[in-house]
Image 1 (tube, rainbow, N blue to C red):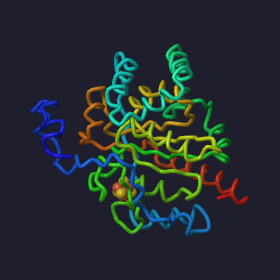
Image 2: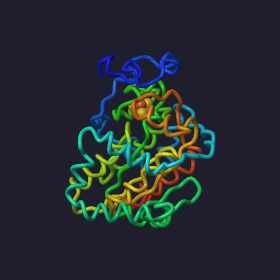
Image 3: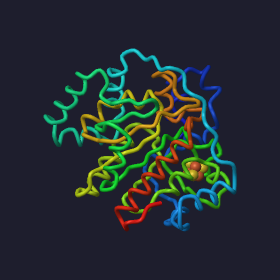
Image 4: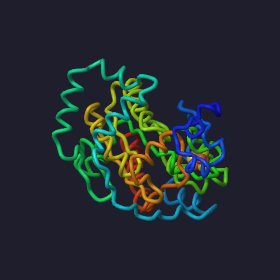
Length: 301
Ligand code: SF4
C-alpha cells in the first residue's frame, strides 16, 4: 500500500487521530490469504491433549484472560453494516455470490431483518443457525470447519504483522508460542479444518464462500472470535448466505462504536483484543479436535 493511499494520509481520518497512529508497516496489508504455517500441527506430535498442552505451555506462560468489554450501544447498526458491506465490496465477492441466487438471498435477508436478533446468544457465545454448543459439536464431526480469528487478536510484535491474514503459527517462534492464535491453530487437525486470520469483515465471507466451493460435499461450519459489534452487525449476512456456526465474543480493547470499527477495517487499530476466558475457549477446541478424530479414526482425545 503506498503512503498516499493510507487512510489518514489521504485525509479520511482527522489529523488529531492520525498523529497517534502506529508506524507505517502496520498498514502493509496483505488482503490475500496466506496459509504460511508448517504442514504439521504441534498437537499431532503428541499422543494426547494433556501432553501437548503441557509441552506448549511449558515454554511460555499461557495467555492471560482479557478484560470484559463495555456494553455495546450502536444506533442503526443494521443499516450501517449493510451500507458498509456494499460500499466496501471492492473485489465484488459479495456481489458475485449474491447474483448467483438473488431471490433466495433477498428473501433470507428480509426474513433475517424481521427477527430482533438473527442469532441465539448464550453469554459470550453467538449461535448462527444453531441452538447450542452441543449442536455445534455434533455437527462438526461431519462438517468442514472454518476456524477464524480477528486480526486485532494478534500480538503487536507478530512476526507476520497485524493487518494481514498471514500467520506462521510457528511453535519455535517465541512470539507465536505465547500467542493464543498460534496455540489454537496448532491444536487443530490438518484435515477438515481451515484456519484463518481475518483482516476485514468481507474477508470472512470470501473464505466461507471459497471453502464452500472447495468442499461441495461437506456441510460448512464456522467458529470465529470477534468483537460484539462485528458479531451482531453481520449476523444478517450469515443468515442470508446460510452460514452456520458460533461466534466467540472477545474482550480487551474492542471497537466501542462503528467509527472505531471502520478505522479497524482500514488497519487502524492500536489496542489488542483477546479471549475473556481462554480456558473455556481451549476446552471448546479440545472438544472439536476430539469430535474430528473420533469421526476420522475412532479415537478420542
Ligand atoms: S501465531 Fe500469532 S504471533 Fe505467530 S504469526 Fe500467527 S498471529 Fe502472529
